[in-house]
Length: 160
Length: 160
DNA sequence: ATAATTAAGTCAATATGGCTGACCTAAATA
DNA sequence: TATTTAGGTCAGCCATATTGACTTAATTAT
Image (cartoon, rainbow over the protein chains, first blue to last red):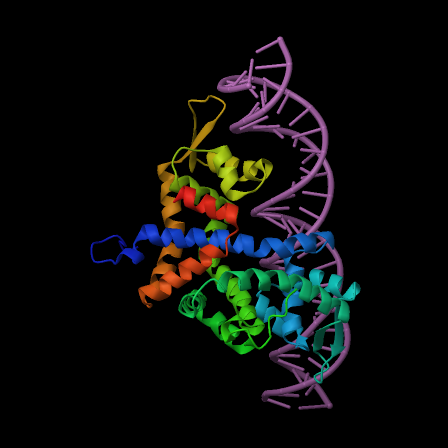
């Protein structure tokens, strides 16, 4: 691995500064997910349920295959979580035009939970970014986007 | 929850833009951890082992209590992971001046693994931030820091 | 028309990483 | 001397992920 501490390296690129970013990622992600986690716990759900509800809420009539390609988990892993959400009527299944496929959408109950969970994260982000200038927020978004692997950047662009 | 989509809200603060940040956090954190995960798998270790090695490497002679206060997991959860790392001689235990405490440090083997794992993340971050101007990186770091809960911001400052 | 592929589902086993509760020892401190 | 603190341990539970093997039904290619 390259020596990142040579004299030619600008201050903000040296290893110590980069290690701070590693820690910022760890701490911020943990606190970012902690809010919804508490609500999910009461429902005997986990973070995986949130993700499913989030992305189904984002794009109605998502198929299982599309959802799997976003979440990048196995269908066996998704199955447990999704079956619970369907059984408890947060998510509604219907058949696609291609009759092999299933379309997922949120029920009213599902929409309510989605909003409740996402509102916590939205409020947290809102309260953070309102403190900053647009230039900082743009830096934040641009750098975060570049932290994503190329294939997943495409996935992000697809859904946005 | 407040309506975030009223006309007074600047463009970068509206709900759609904030939801993009939610997704950026999800995708970037997943890709950020995927590199080390592959190496850890070969050693029959997980992400929890990486965290322990990372923070012990960062501050030599860390006590169990200090480590727990960073990781915010129970001692029972830490115990399983830490015992493995000690048994396989990645981490060395010694007794503190207060003889109730134990001090944790990395062996040579532990240092080598720490470097191997962290170098992946350091390289990833390095390759990202070298593309940007310092102003963007500062925005990134400032906003990420603000995403951390107050108590954990203090924790971050303590260790840095 | 038949063969191959695709979307989805299911069963079983395994690993990892959290948690709670209960209980213990030894050392430091009040 | 009593209490608190640091650390350890046993047991059980739950959530989330994995791999592998196999099935069904529908679509597409030959």
